[in-house]
Image (cartoon, rainbow, N blue to C red; front, side, top):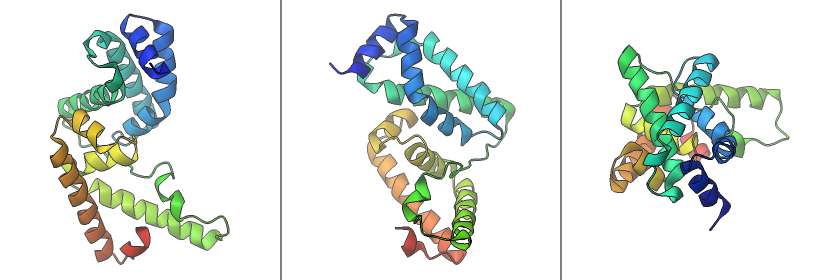
Length: 190
């Protein structure tokens, strides 16, 4: 039995130290996920706290310790969606607030001009991701922000795996089409 499963089982039995360690491991990705759905850092921190409270409160409902990661993001997503529905507020999604996705295109030898162009490209992609349909945007955010695989996304969204694969493909196709219309060389992003 790996350490993660052992921690999850301890957590399910009410072990606060195990809970804190699980959160310490997940906090950076979970916070990044939350930041993609809210306007400010203060709101992201508030949501994070609320998610932590709910995770602790509903710990006994986790049936399969191996699916802790997916279960955690289901709670996070539901918490955020509840708030958004309650406030009838449309979330702004910042797709590249942390530069991880486009780091693959960066070369340490690039000068300030190239860095500025890359920053503008990030902003452009950010904006276009925000303009995608919710079903597409959610999948992209879960995939590239929370680093969930497609099976985990299927669980979090409670959508069949095939549907997630289709939507992921469609999201990428729509995004490429929008970027191409704006004059971006989409082939260089592959």
